[in-house]
Length: 321
Image (cartoon, rainbow, N blue to C red; front, top):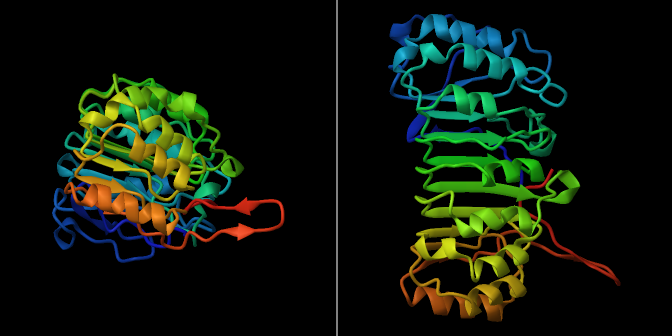
């Protein structure tokens, strides 16, 4: 699976792309009201006629940004090679002009612009520091991604989409103090694309002590999905979750058995196992056990196909390259 479509909504708002440099320059009256949409600002990923910072400057001149609630950063120029240093700098410099900003997503980039594991990312720390009123933050792309440990009083949703999330970034999130965070969504990916976190790096999430408000935990798109499930089977955080997402990864009968024989999951509202490598016997057992207790379970195998030779079975996460 690849990411072929841009975000259609973010932070509860429909996404609206700010006109490009070749389009007619609008006046504010021809655009949506500033607070009614999530504004997507992007340039061509190659041979761009303007830099992202220039497009953002036009946005600042055209829209009453004091009312803007959500921003989506799309492609910047040469995303394969260039970190969004200028993008981050422009956003930080404009923080006083964005007092109502509550949602920010960096890297709404689809496969035609750059495959997810080839997006060159940067240090998200300055953005999280510059916008202390943010309630939702998301980033796509793990290559050179930096997420240092931080404290944020108001952040409720944190999403990292990657084909390989660096262990240092995982550790940074795990060491962060996020008292309001209710939804944590990490696409851990594979070691082939830089996803080198191990179970020890995830232990703070299992304990949940720095995340007292957490109700949805997604540790998914991982090649170590079975080991994650084995840890979740006795993880203290599970007892207070409403939704557990272990989808998109290399989940086999070993991981599902660990969940079924561990602590009860019948209190969950939803368990997401989408894209898995379960046997039909185990799948049926899991569905029977949990759906009878009122848990919504997605155990669809999707396109999780195995490749096998004489010596090895090859299984893949949903989103890699």
